[in-house]
Image 1 (cartoon, rainbow, N blue to C red):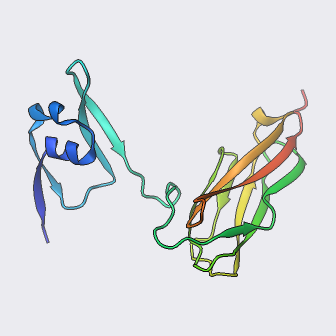
Image 2 (image 1 turned 180 degrees about the vertical axis):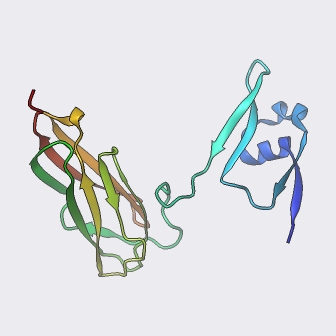
Length: 181
């Protein structure tokens, strides 16, 4: 089925909330778009001096980028331990730890994202719902870099789920051995 719609740039801009009505009168050029909006849309922006420039609008729909809680009823989550101290570690070593949690609510727990505070902290999480009373785990691998050597570190993992509040934070700590010169 080939459903195309013709949409003026002005209409698209207003629909996306990019322009106010006084800025769009000169931009009524027709474009064709499919019925669905693709993940990346680029629309021109007119600044205060009347200069038009590109304004990329990026929407990343990958599971790794989703930071919104799932729609539907809320539940609650309880971690057995919210802070893990690795003690003393060497740089460039993989250090895994699993944060175990329980769905303490009455609805299925849906985790939409787990995000480390830096690239050295990489979490993975269950993609399937965790039923009430059941447990799951957030696996974290911490790999300290040379820039962290000789300093105590504390990193966070933010878990986004259908909980109240939407984000829950767990922490890892470590002292990183200095690099021998």
